Image (cartoon, rainbow, N blue to C red):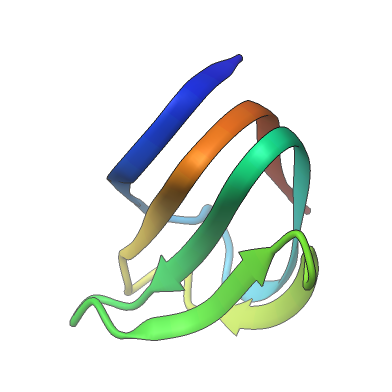
Length: 85
């Protein structure tokens, strides 16, 4: 549960396989906005998820690349979850 949060958080990670991944953002906010960006190794955006665009599919190189997830909050309050498959 978020309580009126503004700011950002970034996590570095790798994916187990090189394949297409579908990302889904489930944002149940009572106020404010949240965006999730998937960044490449040079921290350039590959995709952006928001309440208006909660699903995207992308081909990722899981064996050779690392990626960053950047969460951006603007006066956000409520719950949010990011899933991929």
